[in-house]
Length: 344
Image 1 (cartoon, rainbow, N blue to C red):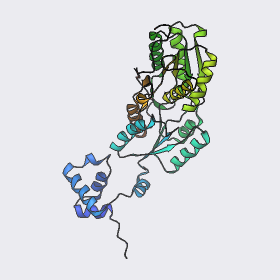
Image 2 (cartoon, helix red, strand yellow):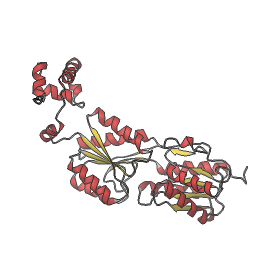
Image 3 (tube, rainbow, N blue to C red):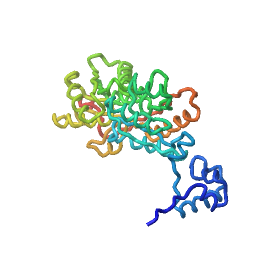
Image 4 (tube, rainbow, N blue to C red):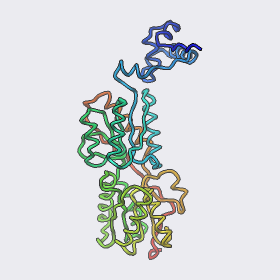
């Protein structure tokens, strides 16, 4: 059986009676608008009829552009990332780019490996959700001249653009809420200090409790090993040792808050009757927990959109100044917080 001949751009152009550059523009979503709508529709129908598929590899060799964007996540199972990815994909698709999403984990050796694999596949830019403070992986990208943007993580040296939520405001909202209910013994389970979110949320918590004039023996901070449920459970146990009689917990994120639920339940401590808990991120389904989790909502879809737009801008203008976009969080009050027993 003879192999079916591959239809080329020139074949399609000849049949459509247009220049092959016109077909090329139509096949690229980013340039399709340059062609009259009637012509573009006719070419797309003909391409579908003839089974034409653009040869992206060949096109990339000619143009030195792959149309690929690398997205590296620290934990692909964390429910906060799908809406961020949806925002990224929505913007990239309009410009004809395709994201390659990889779970980089928390180990730098693994992150370096996946980053090198991305570079080998000629990604045109990278969106990093893994970046730590003073991260050598960021140095690697910048030294190679790869356009890079960070999402949900900040970069205090100003070397790379980033899109983050205002962590200081988030913790102010959290502590203000708890104090307004009458809590005066409040603990914070911080995320890893190696991350900008862990460091900034901790700073925001300390600033807020001092603004409310809590004494040093009325608050405590424990650092979780990671932003995970198990790490939250372990850190919650440490928090009770550090601050006996605490009545409220400000968790570093929602997974950490779920770990607090696990510890409280195992110890027979009721939430919120005995201890109130506030999370961070408002990840899907935390409203279905028992009790529904009071948490900080961050605009995750917008965060992804803004990160993608920043990266495309960086690809188009490599020498443009770096930008920090700080999105505004909001407190979502549910059933996991109430006034402490001695106030009710």
